[in-house]
Image 1 (cartoon, rainbow, N blue to C red):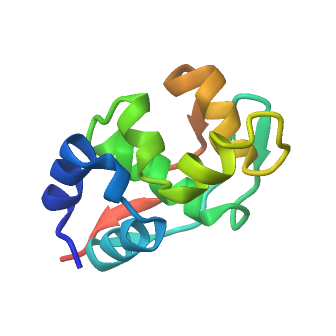
Image 2 (image 1 turned 90 degrees about the vertical axis):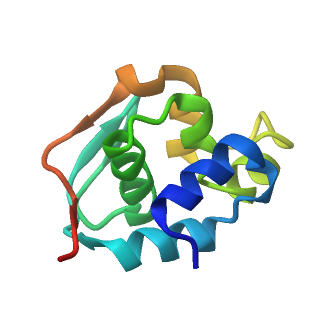
Length: 116
């Protein structure tokens, strides 16, 4: 499992190697998660809905990642499911973030706190 600094370095150097499962493992290992509502463009996510997206967006915000690096944290959900199927309707959080970027993301509360 990668430490968050290693994950960030990897997303910047070899983003094609990022895997969603590894991203989740890093976040879950280092942070306590509390489900939170958030808006992402036109996608409204209630607390407990789309927790993976909530974790990734919060992690990326905490680490000041840009939109490109943030999208890479989704791994093949972004690179395969979305980029290779641009007309698809799945993965709306990824698709909305591609359109609106950070300007479209609004958290009702912070969902990640570092573990002691």
